[in-house]
Image (cartoon, rainbow, N blue to C red):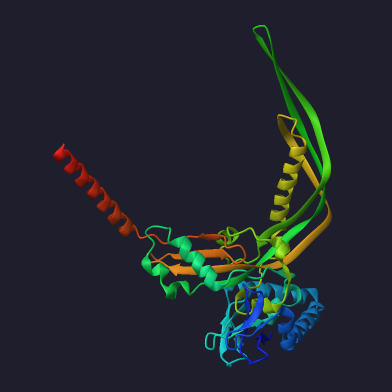
Length: 370
């Protein structure tokens, strides 16, 4: 597995993807390059990825038993969080990562690096949603949002704290396709009328059947076990129409994670969600009934589509004085915010006590002069 860095063709400085302009920028000479210009200036990246893909294809031709062993070992390493060591091509320092990190920074020279082998072969994403919000914009949105909250510790807003905000690409599976539906149920209709002083109720039961086609696209699930799933999921939705064919260059300047959850593990959950959506559509087609019972649904796929995509998220952690670690996330494309924020209980109690005392004083003064 090789470590890739993207260099400026003008000065040799590091190139990172700029979310605002959608180009690659050099922090040293301030040059900027399009995707095509960046790839032309860094042909080694494509060569490395091609070589990694060929190696993966060769390994795929080994025996099923050996593949099963390798897969099990990889899963064990991921589950145990085993550290993996690489060499920075810029300064020669060792880069230590866990088994799912695909892009990071060198701790010593701060050079952005991409670990090519983590994103080759079957682990190569189909698409990527590039960051649209820069770090500066993310920090500004974060401060604007949190300053509206009361009793948050002051050091939560310190520059040294907010500068720890990190852009991370998280792996997702996206599922969709075209499906034929066959829906059956017992429908109930009720007719009420009155003759004189007597009210009559007639209940009729019908066999209901609806057939049709459902097209679904964009059912997604996080494909990383170690992610705070609830936190990351809550910054959705993303504008999936802005997906770009995957290029490792988009990862330069950000961190990225490789999936460790496969299709088979989440397929039942997504297909259950698909069935719920299809059932809802069929119910709408049978809305003339008061109620529908004993429902049965059969889905037959005409076309199924699985896509492995990287989603952009700005993340920030804060170690609270209460011993709890607080997590914050922002959608790197739309700016949607979600998080758990620290709360200064003593300060809140003191403020409440002072407010109560002031109210009591006002009441006493009012009573004295009454």
